[in-house]
View 1 (cartoon, rainbow, N blue to C red):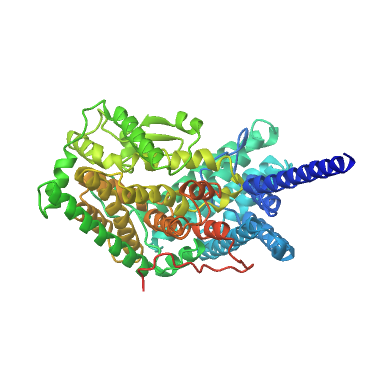
View 2: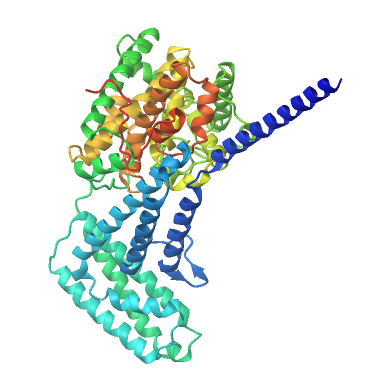
Length: 592
C-alpha cells in the first residue's frame, strides 16, 4: 500500500512537471508569435526615429502636422537621424546574435537592413540637396527662425522682420537668375519644389507661433512675412512649371513618371531580398506570360472561338451586371471563394474576419488611377458613376465584369488584403517598418495562383477571367521594368496593356498612371507576381514536400507579418543565418 502511494505521488509529480514544461513551451511559442529577443530594440529604434521626425518636421498652429504636406528633411533633421542610425548600428554589433532564436535572428537582419537602407537614403538626399545648394542660399535663414520657435526664444520683432525682408530679397535675385535659363533634371526640379514647400511650411510654423502672442513681433512681422511667403510660393512655381515640360500627355490627365535606371533598380531589388536582375525578372514574366497564352488558347477553343482569344474575351467583357448590381456580385464572388477554400481545407479564417469586411464605392476621380477594385479593411468597388462620360462608364462595366472580378475579390478581401489587415494587426505588429510589397501583394497573388491550380475556375469563361489577371501581373513586370530601364514610354506601356492583355484603353491608362505617379515604389508592380511566385515556391517546398499541411503553412506565413518572403522561409525552415545575411534563395528555378 505504501509503495503504491509513493508510485502514485511520483506519477502525480511527473504529470505536474510535464504540464509546467508544456505550459512554458507553449508560453515561449506564444511569445515569439508576438515578439522576439530583438522586439524591444526594434520598437526603440522606431520610436527614436519618430521622435526626431516629430520634433524636426514643420510645425502648424495647434501642433505638429500629423501627416506633413512635405516629408523633406532639414539638414539638421538628417544629421540627427544619422546619429540615431549610427547609435543603433553599434547596439546591433554588441547584440548576442548567435544566442538568438530564429525569430530574433530574422528580426536582427530585418532591423540591420532597415537601418542600412536609411543611412544610404539619407546620404543620397544630402548629396542631392548639396547639388541644389546654390538655389537655396536663403534656406539657413529660415532654418534659424524655426530654431527660435522650437524653444520659444525671444528676439526683437523688428530684427526678425528685417531678417525676413532680406531673405525675400535673396529669393527675388535667385528667381531672376533661374529664369535666365539654368536647367535642372526632372528629379532635381521635383526635389527643388519639395525643398521650397518645406521652407514655406517651416516659415509658417515660426510665424504662427509668435503672431498675436508677442507684441513686438505682431507689430513688425506681418508684411515681411507675407512678402516672403509669396516669394516662396512663386519660387516653388518656377520648379513646378519647368517640371511639366516633356510630359507624356493622353486624353485624360498626363501620365507623369521618371525612370530610375538599372543601377537603382538593382539596389532596390537587393534591399527587398530579390536575387534577380531586372533582365532576369523580365525573363520570368515572359515565361509566365507564355503559360498564360497556352491556357488562354485552351479556354478560347473551349468557348468555340478557336485561337481568337480576343473574341472570347469580348464575350466575357459584355457579361457585366446592370448598374446597381455590382455590390451584390461582390458578395456572391466572396462567398464562392470562401466555400471553395473551406471545401478544400486550405486555411482557418476567424469568424470575426469573415464578419467585418466592408465595402465602399470608388469615386470617379479615384478610378482615373484605380480602374479596378482595391482592398484592405474593405473593398473599394470600381464601377460607373453618373459623372463619368458614357464611354468611360461602359469601359468601367466591361473591365469589372463578373469573370474578371471572380479572380480578384478574394485578392482584396478573404483570404487576401482584408485577412492580412486582420491578422497583421494581431501578430508581430512591431515588424510594420519592414513591410515589403513582395509580401503585401505577394500573399493575395499567391492565392490567385493557388486557387487556379486547385481548380477554382471550372468553366472556360472563369478560367479566362482569372487568366486576364495573371497576364496583367506579367504585364506589370514587363512594362514597369522596361519603363524604368528607359526602354518604354508611358504610351507604349498603355498600348501593351491594351494589345497584349486585353485592357479597355481607359483602364490601361489608369493602370499606367497609377504605376508612375510616384505614390508607389518603382518595384511595386513587379512585386505582385514575383512575391506570389516566392510563396508558391515555398508552398511546394513545405506543403508539397509533406512537411506542413496547407492550414499550418498559411497560418505560419501570415503570422510572420509582411516581411520579405525569404525571411519568412528562414523562420519556417529554421535556416542558419548570419549577421551579414545576403539574399541567397533563387525561388524561380526556370531562370538560367
